[in-house]
Amino acid sequence: MSEKEVRKVGRTGIDEAIYTNCINQWLAEGIGIDDINPTMLRAKVGGAYPKAQAILDNFKAGYQSNEQSLIPDMPADMQAALLKFGNEFWGKLYLDMKKESQEKDTMLENLKKQFSMDRNGQAEYIESLLNNEESLERQLKESKAAFDQIKKSWDEQAETIIKKEAEIEFKDKTIGQLNNKVIDQSSKIEDLVTKNTDLTNAWTSVEKTLIKANGINEALSSKIGDLKKQCEKLDETKAKLTESIEQGISERGEISSLQIQVRSLKEERDHCRERVSDLEAAMLTMATKVVPKKKTTKTAEKKTGTDV
Image (cartoon, rainbow, N blue to C red; front, side, top):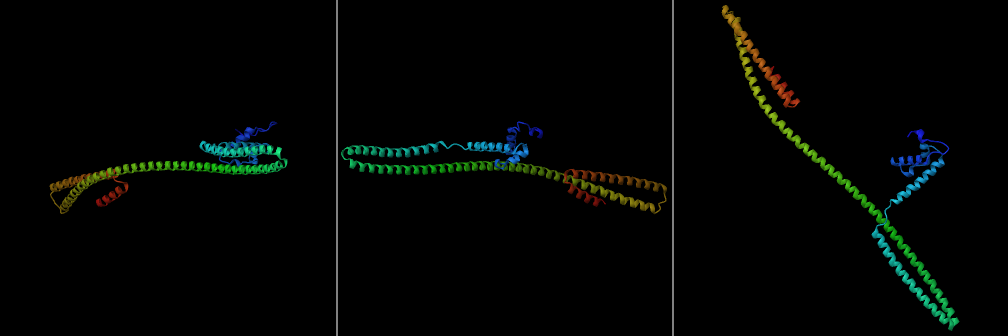
């Protein structure tokens, strides 16, 4: 609803429902009913201040009545106990009053009989009856005051019981929430234990793969060593042939033969070096796939330094 639709000002004034909707919206947002005032309501909706105050007062009265209606009735067993005690007390009080009334009637009858015989004696007797009646009225008032005091004590005990029941209900709710949190934490712990087991199994598999790769690496290193030795022998042979050439072997056929042998040895040496390079590249590729990057880099640097 736009602000123009909310502020409908005319001869009939702003609709009361707009005020109540605004109040309900504030209550839903967590604002207390006592924190809302006519100034806020008028600033939000518009209209006259007295109208906003009257609508707010009516709303608060109904809201408080609604809150009071949420108070539960007294438990049936407590009502029965109070009713039983009240009936017993009232029955005893009634019987005492009835007995005293009967005694009073008897005394009045005797007074009438005596009055016919002795008027003077009857006058004195009537005065004593009047005194007794005042005493009975005083006792009745005292009994009623005692009953009111007992009833007040019952009401206080009933309120205490209601408060205790509310506290017990709140504690039960809190315990239930704590139990739910414990169950949730237990589930998370079980998930972590499962993930840890999976990671342990994965690392075991990686270790096996590393052991296997190390075996292959050792075999390749041994083969590379053999090839290097062959290259070294070829270099020695080449050096010897070069030395023989430099000594001035005159025979042309021998020189050509030696040159052919030298070229052949060079080609064989180059072929050996190519095979060594290919094997080292294969080892580096395999180490990159299996071993973590940091370990692979150190191994490659170590092998490069050895080759040089």
